[in-house]
Image 1 (cartoon, helix red, strand yellow):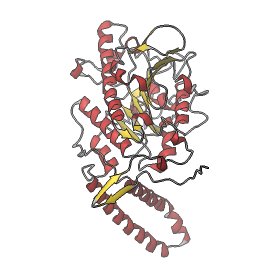
Image 2: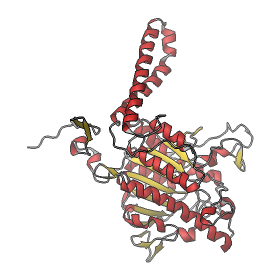
Image 3: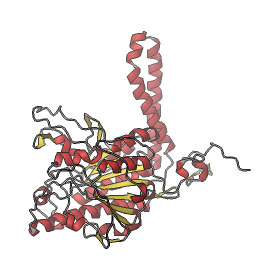
Image 4: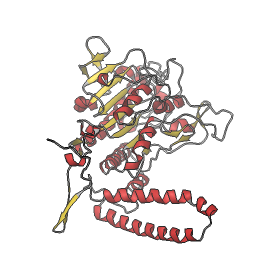
Length: 450
């Protein structure tokens, strides 16, 4: 007779002796009995990588033979070619939309709808920008569920400075074009673009990921917190009921710090690659992008967060890419009017972004995690909120899903222009954080078909 218990070994358990410590690999005993985590290809992380200004779709769409909504065999298009080594772990998704009418999107709508499924509210009459409104984004739905397990509920990152002031797109606040992540209808989350700041959020101000330095910093933080708690206890004895009530929010903040330190202590023996704190923002775009991708891999590897969104540039980006021979502004050449002299550099930028994304995918695949890799245990979404940039087309969006969330090696073109939010509902289900509705969703996509 077999007895199944709920007892399990903590994942961060280490063997200690003779002055050495050895972190254990993920064992069956570390997984709750009969839990969903015992299933192969469990998904426990979410990553979103966003690119702006649409796509040259004639160079993006996979080359297929045959008809039907699902193409199990396809050739990688020129734009997607850099992802070919990961064929078995990705699915290219076509046919999804963020709006049904061809002219029903501007750049502000593209970025805002991408993860929320709702259009932004215009604020022409509110120069302060206080009239902004959208809705919670799917990454923040997942972040709420995972927050108790990690030091940081989520990370929101980008490669452009934050621009939340003024109007950037007609009657829409610059807020809308500068973020894709929303904690709630009126709470957009800024994208941090300085690697030094990101490093400090992840590993503190110790200047390195070295384990000894991290432990010393944690001991110092614990000592400070013990002193704070002792002071609170003395203070409470001298306060009346009304004042004690006023301290409740402060107590909650202290408890959150305690939780984060406890999580950090549990993760203190992780064998992380040693990375020194970045000095600032690299001058070169590619160096900047790769450094930010490296930090994301470290964040997942150390289980500091399980949800990350990343904008490779903001919507309306006028960045040029002289390193690949494109000096003209990205946004201006996205309005190509089918002119080959603009379509060629436009598609070149698209392919460049995909090649940098492939660097990230390779790093995730090469990083062990339990019985597989980080890539195996996450849902990684890449795409943008419009297809053809010339017409701001909100239909047939360019989307790639990578990792353990779907059966790879396929191109799936969904008929009927279902909402992109339907995919988000499906992914939240796969992450174990199901909700009934998000934005304009009207159902989930068949997991077997993606």
